[in-house]
Each structure stands twice: as C-alpha cells, then as structure tokens.
Image 1 (cartoon, rainbow, N blue to C red):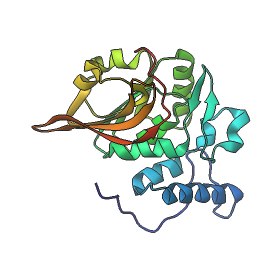
Image 2: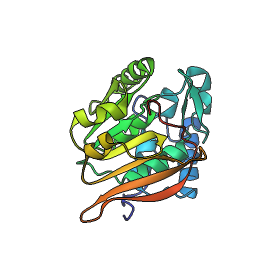
Image 3: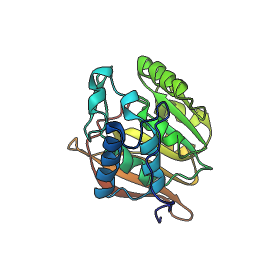
Length: 231
C-alpha cells in the first residue's frame, strides 16, 4: 500500500496541551518523529497519530521524561509499554482506513489504543488485567477519545462475541491462530500479531484474508512479544 500523502508537515498539538512550536517539548516531538521516519515508518497518517497522542500521558509518572525515547517502559501488573518504533510498525502493518473497526487484544497502558482511535472508525480493546483496563479507559476518557472502549477480560476468548472487525492487533505471541480470532476477522481483513516458535522466540507477522486463498501469513520482522496471556 502506498503511504498516505498529506500537505506540508507541521507540529501538531497534543490532545491535552499546546506547546509552542519553538518550545523544548515541540522540538523533542519533532526529533521523535524524525527518528521514526529515519527508521522506515513512512505512512503519514500513522506518523500523525503518533504526533498527536502524547506518550507521556500513558507512561507512569516517574518515567514521563523518557516518553519520547524509543524504549519500552514498565507499567503495572508486570507488563511493559512497548517502544514507539515497535508500536508504529504494528500499526502501519494494519493499513487502517477511516471506515475500519479495530479489535485490540492487550490494551496495556492504552497508548496504542489511543493511536488506533486516531486512524479507525471504532476501536474495541480488551485487557487481561482489570487494573490496567480501568486506568486505560480513564486515560482515554480524559483525552476525550470517544470512539475507543476498553474492557477487562481474556481477549481471545471474547473476540468472537464482539462481531466482525476489519483489523485485529494482538500484543502477544501465539503458536497458532485461535478460531475465535479468525472468526472475528471480516472479509479482506488483517491481523497483526506475534508468532511464537517452538524455541520460544517470537516474530511479528501479518495475516491477511485474501479472497480465494484464505488466510495468508507473512513475516514482518523480529519481535520481543511474550506469549499471550491466557493461551
């Protein structure tokens, strides 16, 4: 898919703040985006979403000053907030359009949920750990994000009950594709997930529903996603 084309690039204002273009915050944001571009993220809509969702609002307070670095950050319940580059790779591989409904398995801090909400018509996110689900929902509400919802539960088990989705993203690695996820994917849809090998290593893969061919899987690249909880 060709990258979306936009007009002249400008510093966008975060959802809950408005740093002046000459401020240190704005300069840090621009450097953050340039690093993503330099490492191969070309979809302008994805970059715009990353630009307008303030990562520091989703990081634990003590790590807020590290939010614009390309590093994973620890969050409660023994989970992590993935590095922005990895989030960008997953989201770009989904090829989300504005009319799409997206299912996310593993809300975590809610950061990726917020990014998805900037691209899709509707986002349903499921988080295994209830404290994380509650806090993620609160963050989205504080930012005025109305087209995304977070629910607590085992995402793979719940997937089939939500209806069909054009795109599904799974923040975890699996040895195979559960029937509940395959059944929740709309015709022509895309799933991005981790694939767990017999050796315990994972790779990031994209699974596309192609008419006449069924589900076709292709490898995107290396992944540090752990085994999906509940499988």
